[in-house]
Length: 276
Image (cartoon, rainbow, N blue to C red; front, side):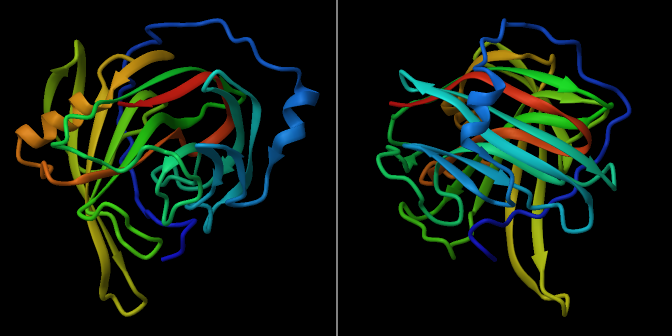
């Protein structure tokens, strides 16, 4: 498994959408010419905004047709303003790409001073603030989500498989659905979520299992375009349900859009992670 690479997953489309946008914020984006100065369209290419980096991650594009670009508009006061544009066709049930901003491990460590990993029983709190807007030039099956990675060792390298993965969906469009089956609806930090439980299983050409890990997906009951999310409260709820071990290490916080099909853009006006 390569450092850029990955997680290979299929999602199950749902027949109903979740809510309308609950919160909207004005976007103050830099001019297009300035944005393109930090543009990256090559597969898996990155832009450093230490301690974060942008990743033009196209992990599911092998059997699809399309393209994606990810670029930085500005990074000031610890807040990133960035965008990713996409145009994908193919199977509506499989993710093509995850243009994202990464803090911490992603099949290895790229940036320093991330303040990660965090052991779940350490008492250190992790929160994130994210304001974004979605443009759909064609109806787009997609989500806007966090991707959190967990290991049982504090400093995994590129070849160390994760033990658990937690997705946190703030917004989904046109029937996108998470991996696994719905376990329950719960309220965490004042927000209602649907919790799904699934598993990633990777096999070689001979059908032998090469790696596997648990995937827990929080899907927000009502879509939003702006939220400050208590990621620690969400992981604590999994620990309380004995789904995550309290001795696990949170090694990465990623945020972006998983695109199944469609043409459009995710514009983030402000993004930051606070590792307490």
